[in-house]
Length: 407
Image 1 (spheres, rainbow, N blue to C red):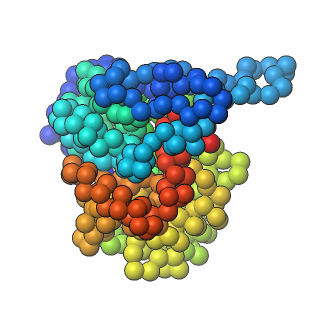
Image 2 (tube, one colour):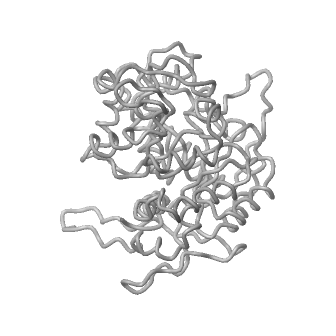
């Protein structure tokens, strides 16, 4: 990904005692969700209220006598969006960094700003233990997406608590069924700690050396292998109740450098189509699951981008929507801590530019004041630089990705 927390070496890493902490289910619906048809349910809950949990939407019973799936009992996403004010709709499009060593600080950020999601980076684990994330969820007016980077190998988040996960390259030496099982188990561990989004798997196609920016984070340099194994990993997360994110569109695997450190280039778009983009065609096509989200990287792509990286370029999002038929949630890579963006744009402006370009969610790993970002977005919405209709559609995608409604 992007916002990476590289593992400390085994000689310096503090080993923590595994602690089972109850988590909130990604698809948790708010209490009282069963409302009369056509009425917009009240999804705004009082701060401090107990977070609601409910089973996932019903699935049809197996057997030849089943003629059709039962109706989805969830409200429409449009009705939920209608229950939010303009600033709260914008806030749903933000995933902001919180300090995992400061549970009280995380609660304050969520309570004050009503953000749609939080990201836990770094090495601290206080928020991941003893049900601390329950209080953060209770402070939200809409159930939160709680995200970490947990790919395996160099980029994983709960290894000190629940054990290590192999790198993607190492997992590709197993069978897809074994990888799926690993992801189911890991998803259950994440969910038990209150994490319901995993910014994984990486679908970059790469044969870079293992310790390079993508390197062993890629399953393979063969697009078909990447599709098979990344698909198996996402299926396992999904079975466990965790939302997966395919990254880094349109392909970081053959980049010239590390976008954490500055601008990087990848091969021209025509070359990406022939190789790097094939996993997206496999996983996001008309027959694909359409249930995972996509993260866009900060890449300079000849034939696609111009002055700005891919995450800030409208043509990138048109490519994903039009050429690859994807209508799910699209988020940016980290806009706050990666120098490909932060070296030239302050976070409020970078966020606005990304949303104007077509991102549904802007990710920032920094623990920074959120109000200035929302002020910038609200002004842009008021003066028409952000389309109100497009904003509502993006919020629908956010709420749907959280499992709260049907589109």
